[in-house]
Length: 86
Image (tube, rainbow, N blue to C red; front, side):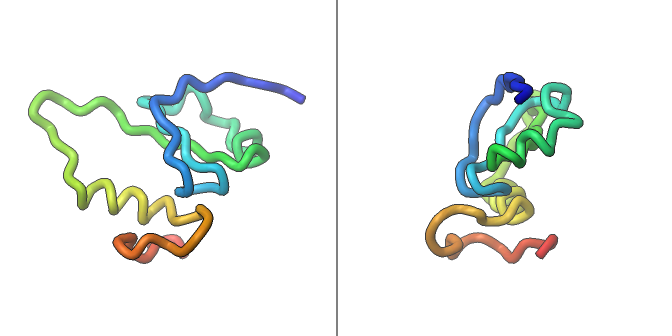
């Protein structure tokens, strides 16, 4: 088995894949390794650093989580929008 390390800023549990989505600032660490991530119940996404004065709203975060989709235990959160990919 091949092992690799991802220095993720966070793991968003329950969204995008069974275990969750690793969030990194760029794709370089995991690009081309989706099969390995999926084998461990993970996926990855990137959020680049914001520019000075740039903000992220709650609606922006809900849109991203809705895109990733709910994969966690229990019912889908009531605030989640239908996934455009479903």
